[in-house]
Image (cartoon, rainbow, N blue to C red; front, side, top):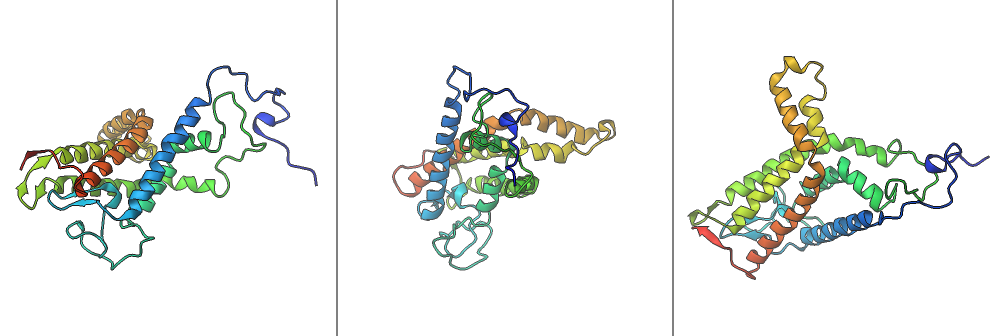
Length: 269
């Protein structure tokens, strides 16, 4: 049996160039920075999701997004904003088991992140006019990459989780001592706003709001929503990276306050 014909840049109809690229600029810098940035976040988020320490500040009702919603008997007292649904969890199950798998799926199947890790981790391709190391290209037509089409369903769950994060941020203004807010509240609110920016700028959100409409003139409200989401969509890449940073900052600040390393800067109460 003959070997399958090569596709992509190695197909018979493409120019035969021995060099991987004729580019003389530092084309490898962007893939390298992407690998470093995504690796730092994945390592940090994985460690923090499993350590089960310093994630809840009872005095101010600060709950880190990496542990929300916390609905098991293993959660710190007061951190179960939606009640206790299950008993004690083994250490290998994160306390935010209801949200983390879906958030991972939402980010992993995101159109921008797909481009980012395809080009950086898989080098497919690493940059424009740079040949990838594979001889064949099948895109997202086969397993496992065909599962990327589930992105819109992860978006629905991600939307609900953004509502949960919003509730957590609002609840943090009502501590046991009454209404008050501090630097932690500011960080939580900014993080939630940016998370909404990432969620609403999603390509699936744009499709949900107006993708199937044939006559915008008959649906003026949806058209306005679609226009707003379309404007956000142009900033989806920026929101994708910014929210990785704000999630780390939010979690790190709550961790430092919960552990007693620093005190929350209070403005009221």
